[in-house]
Length: 359
Image (cartoon, rainbow, N blue to C red; front, side):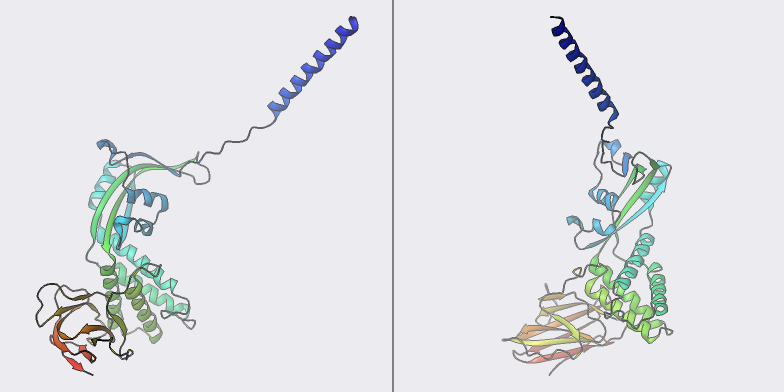
């Protein structure tokens, strides 16, 4: 019996020791650190909160997450628009509200456009039409400086203020979200401009600088010409699908297209010969000898100096109305009666009327 008690006592001691050892092991082993995903900022107050609107505008949410105007442009309600977002930080809510209400749109737009044009120019430094391997660094820098001066001092029409907002924001250290880097009021304002309109305006201002600056070297002129062509054809986006070609026509260097008209139609070409400072921004082609109603064709793909556009038109009379440099007033017009199977061509020069000749 005594031996049995000793066995049970020994077993109890061993069990107790095992419990103690296990307990000590559990206490000594470090627990895995919990990893929490925390945003790099927190919104403490904002414009809509007092009105019971707890949601930020979608454009602002995207901008806060990315910091990029170009990401806002991908939203469906800004299709075909350039977006420009200006910001201003302050420690006072009243200052933020005042700035958002009266932000100088033209100034912030010009500064942003300048950056975009510079990025487009730099992105084409790959042996393309804009730049080539023989372009030295000093030449490129002179062009960049001139482009910066031209675009920053320019004004652009068509800007529309879409909205403004202010927020009280707390920003955290991106590497340690327990560290507060700043807490302030930030005001945001959003402007938009129709892409094709702005592309034409930027190209026209660069062309005007090129035409009036007699100190531009041949190498610089080649860079300018390539940049202007790139902006007209692809816009200020770095992705090449920004500007699509207009249907029912093509734009080519002068005298480069000698293809026969499509079956049952006449080929009609218009050459821009007004001068290097002018591009044809719109050509409206009306059926008949008057400009009543809607045009058969509304051609909005710009025709640069010494380039031409052509159309295949059914047999009959047509009236062409030409607009330059994105102006709303027509510059010239002409009427032509075409015969299927024939080709016709006109040169738009510095005069009100121009005529088509049968080739």
